[in-house]
Image (cartoon, rainbow, N blue to C red; front, side, top):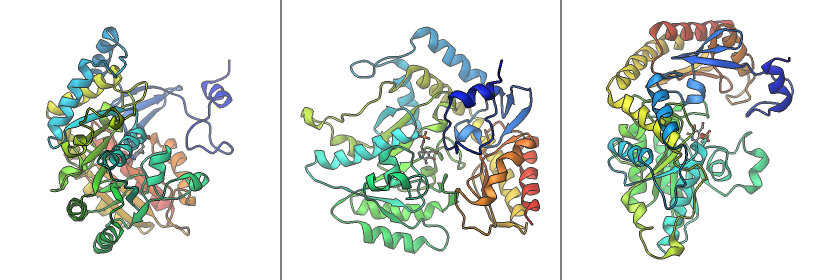
Length: 423
Ligand SMILES: Cc1ncc(COP(=O)(O)O)c(C=O)c1O
């Protein structure tokens, strides 16, 4: 019988994967904490939390048991005209952490949580009898792969093929150190009577290459929007659930967004789920008996009970109190590691935000997803028993919070070794 990798190659088209010249996909059969195992029994440290979704480690028994219990109860409930305990409880738990939010709207993943946010904002103005079509977003932004989320993202190799079909968005500079005033001025300049919303990845732009900026700068941008009555959308799909050191990246700010998008870590990485939370201000535009003002949006698997049960269990683990202290431990480790990485001659920049560490390597080509330096990264780390996929010439670590110091040391040593090799 042919191997799983051969059968995979025969039948499956994997995401973000060139269809010629790519290495065979590695079959993974088991996970345990920060480790996963392939079909030959090889062990890998998951340095990037399975595409940033995993929080408490793989096969976490607390979450697994809660999902198993839910499986025996009810696996799915249509979510219009009906409801269920895990969805209600999850909304209550999320609102405990985001007390300024009023309603939770469920969807399937990060991209759909952003689609919901954009449509919610556009229709907010429509319901109020105004046509507002302009969205402001950051340069380099990545908000997902559906058409709305692509439209608010940067125009780049991810979206080039669809450029003519994307709606117009004003992209302003990210307020990285030294460009804060430029960003604020660009926002003020872009805002007019047609502006519906400003969408942003708070503190860290993930897919762009872990570009980081300060909460104080974001606060100023949020203040401008609030004063100008522009709806603000925080895309916390990557930054949510502890990654930046606090539960949410916007917790570092004094001004709060009107809409917040959540996914990835929401279920601890167990099940796909998206959630878009909005304030009472946004919701009030929909609080009408006029049926034409209904938010006509939903997905078959909206608020799937298994996903909601996993998410409740994940938040219960946070409530038990040790998760954010593990984040603190990892954040301290990263802070220490980044200082040493900065001293390596092949490192252009090394940065850290909470439990996320990024190393931008020098390259003859411009920094970007297709940068040649990135081509050998995944294989190099795989050979050393580490799962790590770079963003071009940016190598980053975003591990599950149960990762041990020993495992962190192994990851950072391998990063140093790779950087050394480039000298
Ligand atoms: C900030 C941000 N928003 C949205 C998305 C899209 O999420 P998904 O891949 O679950 O559709 C991502 C994915 O990486 C993301 O980082």
